[in-house]
Length: 184
Ligand code: AMP
Image 1 (cartoon, rainbow, N blue to C red):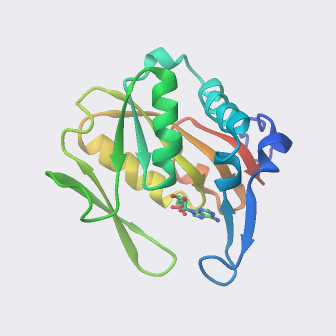
Image 2: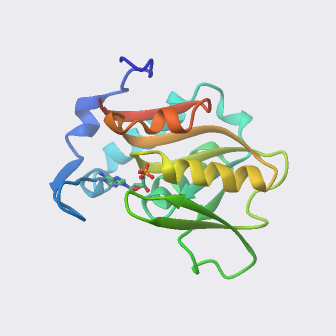
Image 3: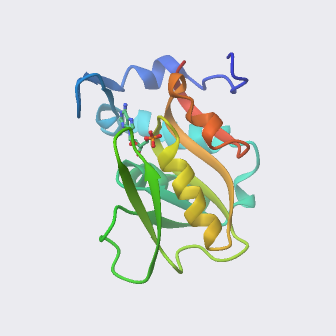
C-alpha cells in the first residue's frame, strides 16, 4: 500500500458481500452497502473477529468501544461483546436524552454535528472507535475529539471499509487505524 497501511485481512471474502450502490445518497457517490455482509452470519462473525484480530494490541488493553450512528452501532456493539467491554453510542444531534458534549465537523457542503453523553466514557479510559466506513475521516476525527474532551484516550480506530482514495487515515493520524476491506 502506498500510504503504509497494513494489508487487507481477507478482501475477497468480505468484499464480495459489500454492495456498491451508484449515486446514493447523491449523484457521484458510490454507497458501500454492508447489509449483505450483516445478513450473512459467517461473514458477520469474520468481520467482528477480523476487526479485533487486526488491532495492533491485545483487546484487554481496551476499556470501551464507541460506535458512530448508525452502522457503527451494529459493528461496534458486536466488537464490544467480543472484547468483553462496554459500548457507548455517538449520535446525531438531539437523539441522546441526557447531558451531552457536541462536536461540529465539516461536510462537503456545510457542517454536521455529533453528540455523546457526558458519562459515556470516563477520564483515563482507552477507547476503540468503530464505524462501518471511513471516507474523508471527518466523522472519525469529530468522534475522537468528543472522546478526548471527556478525558479518555482513543487507543485505535476500526473500520470495516476504508475508502483509501479519500485520505481519511491521514486525517485521524497518528492514532492506529485498522480496516478490513480497502478500496485504494
Ligand atoms: P467521513 O466522515 O467522510 O469519513 O464519512 C464517514 C461516515 O459516513 C461513516 O459513518 C459512513 O457510514 C458514512 N459514509 C461515508 N461515505 C460512505 C460511503 N461511500 N458508503 C457508505 N457510507 C459512507
